[in-house]
Image (cartoon, rainbow, N blue to C red; front, side, top):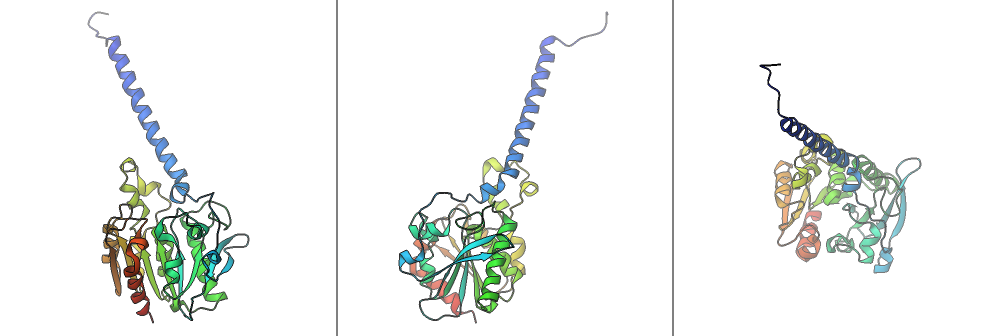
Length: 298
């Protein structure tokens, strides 16, 4: 009909292509969001499945091999390592996310995660594997389950071993700073809190990765370990330690936590240490810092 314009065929095709590409981009974005949400437990807790097995006995150190119940059917594997000489203090240690206790003995691990330096501090040790790790009950590790594991360990010390809460010092490394901070918040009677390579939250860590910045991380994250929101609820002595060259949990995160934390507190930076070299690089000076901190706890 005269007077009515119609779009040229190539214009219609271009419009269809644009809409199709837009839909594909949306689908890809939603797919990435879904993968991040549903695979998050495995990403945060990449528990090794193959590793050389060993025990403290292989290092000439006495220990008790424990299986601490978490609920009616599940348990966490733990090692009780008594101090070389009499000590009332116990370090309850929560390790990072990439290894199990046996690796810390066999030598198949980053330098700074072995328990032996802690043993030289002269205190008792209780080290645990989260469920899903090592000889602990299977099942996906996640934030809530790790907190349950930490509670079971603290209860074991205070109920079964009858150790006063004031003699329990909570120690967390990397992801382990999450359960350590949570226990310090829940147990104000604890003696102290040592955070090695701490972070503000795992969401903040994710935001440092370029390919994740476009995702709605706060909405998608169900393993947030929000230490920042909890640290000012902790009212026990705190020591924070971070490597100056740590790019995963950088010094700025530790500084942010430190500024919000209550007194008494101390922040110690290990010159030249990255995320996996804290104790190795820190050496005796770092152990001396921890020793002084422990001596201030009454």
